[in-house]
Length: 225
Image (cartoon, rainbow, N blue to C red):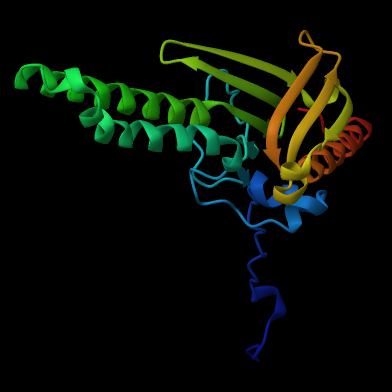
């Protein structure tokens, strides 16, 4: 008699668990990151789980950026005001008597030179802010100091070398706009890191502490890379 149903012939494909990215896995141990959405804006000063991150010097194979920080935009207000003043200064050249005594070609050259200086200052200010970043990866903390177009300084320390973390907020502006400096003591070659004028310093401190706890768990469970 032919079997109407044979359980041995019923092949059930096992469910394959989807591999999770490090940006998703960080939510498992970090309350801070669970509350934050992935950053899609390349100009964010506080960029958790950034999706538009570029590679950086000294990045290790398989190293993932979990948080990218820049100085709070409000700290750039004086430079912005300076640029605005520089843009309107030529309007007052007419108040300088000897300016109109010059040949027209000289007047044009002075204007072009002034605006060239203004553009140069604006570009330098933006690049300094944009490329001076503090990075927290799943392996290290990294401080990239962009000093000029041809020179930058990169300092790094492994997470398990971090010994003490302190957030400092002082003054009315820092309290209102929620930014400050995070001081990090380490047992690495560079003993102290300062994340200056970054947004949400208390969140940064909490996240680093959560990473230290997770690092200890990895050591106990033998999951250290």
